[in-house]
Each structure stands twice: as C-alpha cells, then as structure tokens.
Image (tube, rainbow, N blue to C red):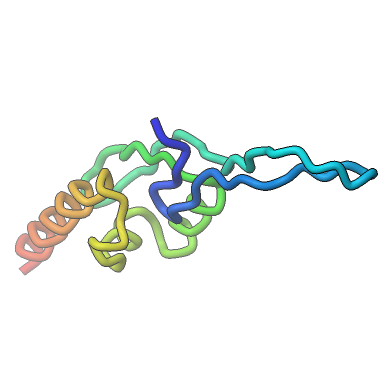
Length: 100
C-alpha cells in the first residue's frame, strides 16, 4: 500500500533533518494519510478513500465525494478512483432519467 493521497496526490518526500550544529541527516516527510470512508449520496453507500487530511477537506469544500468526482477530469484522478467516478456518473444519469 503506497503512502499516496488518492485526492491530492501528495506522497512521501525526503530531505534533511538539520541539528542546531547544522549537521544534516537524511529523513522522510510522511503525508498525513487517513484510511476513511466517505458517504456517496448518489451510490447510497460508503466509499473507502485513502486520503490526507487536506484531501478530506478538499472533498468537503467541493461539496462531497459525488460532486468532487464529477467535476474532476479522469486523467487527474487516482486509478482506484476512476471506477467510482464511472459508477457515480451512471447513478447520476439514472437519477436524472427517473426525475423526468
């Protein structure tokens, strides 16, 4: 399982830990990855997401997982999120057809 956010694409970075005496030691900067579930109104089920705290705030800011996935281009999505986007678009089309 990679340490990469499925929403923002943030991943592990490397750099130096610098002491007071300016000694440099290599270190890793890990993203704040959270395994969580987000409720999809269109699919009427929970969707598992592996995202950073900033990624979860992005989803909430855009109006939820449904609207975020609908407005994001498939090329910018994580490969694991593309089938969920397709399912949401299919459910949205079904809901629009039922509303007519």
